[in-house]
Image (cartoon, rainbow, N blue to C red; front, top):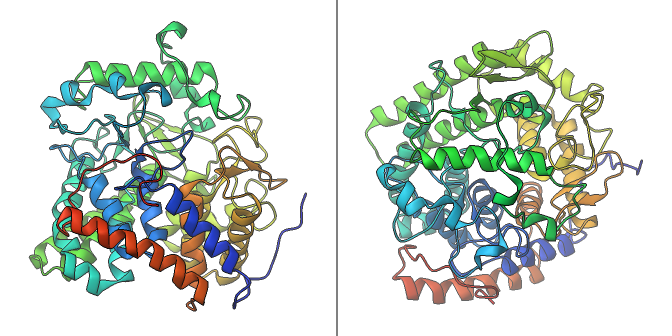
Length: 490
């Protein structure tokens, strides 16, 4: 196993090349209105990717970070859902599957208020968006106020949270449910194996995987996994994306998804206060955060395991196992002290070995199902590591947070901003020049260092020159729905 640094990144100019490289990943992945995760494998706009990307962009281009979120929210459905993919019409249909002609959002989603001018998927991803919006505002409050950023997006974010709190409370216990493994973002985690086993796979001839053209089959979900993903999405589509009417074969309460909803409710309360909304609105967001926190502990906390688990709503039974999703609630304000203490013990214990392996494994290192190379069945991901870092800071574990921050920055640079890592060796896996890896590295660099050297200023100015031209084209309100092709920002 490679050596893991145990000291925080030094200040000064040593990290300047990493800043430059991360900034240029985001420049190169910009399409004119949003940032793609990867030009090759993920050539459209993804929901929680854009939230993480905006968190990084805010440090070098606050206006562009605002537009990132505005573009995503421009594809929101009338029922409040933020779709997990917003499709770029300039990208060929065969570049990604499932493509727009599979989802048929403008027709199948008509009753739910899918936009007619933009094609999207019909499922969702974790609600990081209000948290991202609040951080983007704080990066440049004057620019945010000038553009009316928060007042314009607050109603959309509030509608998104209402959708999750009402139509997605499928278990009736105060938690949002996910109805597809792509929704919690941990696609093929062993968490979902038992629930997926009851899903009849789609026929092999009914779909063609585009992902295998860009990655090793040993890194990706299996064909059987994909066939079940396709079946679930197709059934949801064929029931017009109606949450109540769809006979869900997969319905789960996930701890990461709900922890992010709680954190974003706290952010919405701050946004409501900042824009001068009715004080009752801010109180309502805080009340929902408190109620969801209580439901999270009541329904998903496993005191014997010392970790949050998921709950299968079709059986009513807890889903056992140790996934990184179960550690993410460390970010939640107001967790009982006994819960946070146990979570920290689990994180540092043999199942995750925080500080002893690279970043945070996505699944139990000691489990038979662990696979350090295959997508979410064991590899360490930068976004979940960033969330655990924030949780460690919240819980006052400065030493552990410093070690994890150093690991994230070192690995981002050494792997060329890989999509994820093998946790024992630190070898980069998946796609390189991955946008959220670059963005979250930028966030950690700037959260620990406030000095900007001359070259960084030039990078920022390059982005801002383009932004000024784009803002003239859109009238300055960020309302453009342009989805230009590669190189539009350069």
